[in-house]
Image (cartoon, rainbow, N blue to C red; front, side):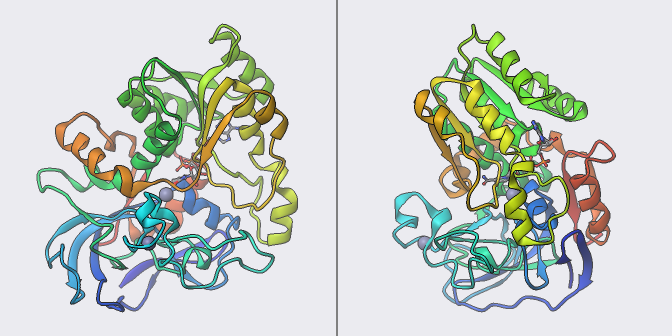
Amino acid sequence: MKAAVIHAPSKITCDNTEDPGIKESTDVILKVTATAICGSDLHIYSGGFPQPKPMILGHEFMGIVEEVGKDVKNLKKGDRVVVPFPIACGSCYFCNSDLPVHCENSNHEHYGPEGGLLDQKGGGLFGYTDLYGGYDGGQAQFVRVPYADVGPRKVPDSLTDEQVLFLTDIFPTGYSGVDWAEVKGGETVVIFGAGPVGIMAAKSAWLRSAGRVIIVDTLQYRLNKAVAAANCETILWTDADEVVEKIRQKTQGRGADVCIEAVGFEPDRNLVDRAKALINFEKGSIKVLEACMSAVRRGGIVSVLGVYPTYYDNFPVGQFFDKGITLRGGQAVVHKHIDKLLQYVIEGKIVLDDIITHRLPLTEVAHAYDIFKNKKEDCVKVVLDPWA
Ligand code: NAD
Ligand code: ZN
Ligand code: ZN
C-alpha cells in the first residue's frame, strides 16, 4: 500500500509499504478514505519528538472497515467510521476514569527515547512515535485500529468525509480546551494560535455561549480565516507585552477569563539533536504560554492544547501562584466528547470543513507537509486522499 513514512526530521515520503494485518482479535483493518495533517505531526516532522526508525504518520483519519478481528462486536466489514487519535482499551483504570488518553494498556512499546522525555509512560496514539506506543498511523491506504470496539464511531452516509473528519482530533481538542476552561456562558475567551486547533477552540467557545472570542496569531492570513470560520475578534501578535496590553485594554484592565494556548512548542529551526532541543526550548513558544499567564485575569483558567515535547521548561510559576490561576492541559479527551460533537455536526449546529484550504493526493505528502509547516500558499488545513 501507499503510506506517508517519516525517515528523519523534514524527510517524509510516500512509500510503498506492506499492508497492515490483524494482530489482536480486537483489531480492525480500516481502508482509509480521508486523512489530514495536524500541527502535532509537525512536532515529529521538526524533530521535537524524535522517531528512531521509519514510521507511518497520521492520527486524523477515517474510512471503511475492511477486515474485522474475531472478538470485535460493534463493527462489521463495510462500516464507515471516524477514529479518535488516542488508542484506548476501554477497561483499565484510566479508561474507567474518563481519561482514555492515559490508557494503561495501549502503550507496551518503548517510551522515553534516549535522555528520557517523559517520566511516566502514557497511552498510545496513532502514528506518534515510539514514545506513544509505536503504532503506525493513518496517512496511508490502510491502517490497523486496535481496540476497535472502543474508539471508532460510525458516521451517517448523509455526511461527507470532510464534514466529519475533524471529529478524530481537532474539534474534540478545541472543545476539550473550552471544557477544561469551564466555559459556561458570557466569558471572554482569548485563544493564542489561529491554526486549525485554535479555530476549532473558537467554534467550541461559541457552542458553549462564550461572551467574546479573541484570537491571536503572528500571521494575518490565519487571523482572516479565524474571522471567516469562527467570527473572532483578532490581535496580530507582535510581541508578548504588546499583545497582553491589548487584551487588558479590551477587558477593563483585568485580563481574559480564559486563555487557550493553541500554538505549542515551535522550535526556531529543525531540531535534529534531542539535547539541543532541550537546551533551546526557550527559543520555542514558551513565550506564548507566558503571555497566556499574563493575559488571563486573576483567578482565571489557562487551557494548554499546544503540545510541548519538553520535559522541563521555564514555567511562569510566580504568576501561577500570585494570580491563583487554574492550569489545565494535555492530549484531548476525544472519547469523552466525540458522540455529543458528532450529534452537533449531524444537527448542523457546527460546520467543520470550512478550514480546509488544500486537498492533495497522499503521493504529494512531502509538499503537503512543507506548505503546512512553513505556512506557504495561505495553508490552514490539508486533507490527503490516499487513493487519488
Ligand atoms: P498550526 O501550526 O497550524 O497552528 C499554530 C498556529 O500558531 C499558527 O497559525 C502559527 O502562526 C501560530 N503562532 C505561532 N507563534 C505564535 C505566537 N507567538 N502567538 C500566536 N500565534 C502563534 O497547528 P495546529 O494544527 O493548529 O495545532 C496547534 C497546536 O495544538 C500544536 O502544538 C499541536 O501539536 C497541538 N495539538 C494538540 C492536541 C491535543 O490533544 N492537545 C491535538 C491537536 C493538536
Ligand atoms: Zn492532531
Ligand atoms: Zn485503557
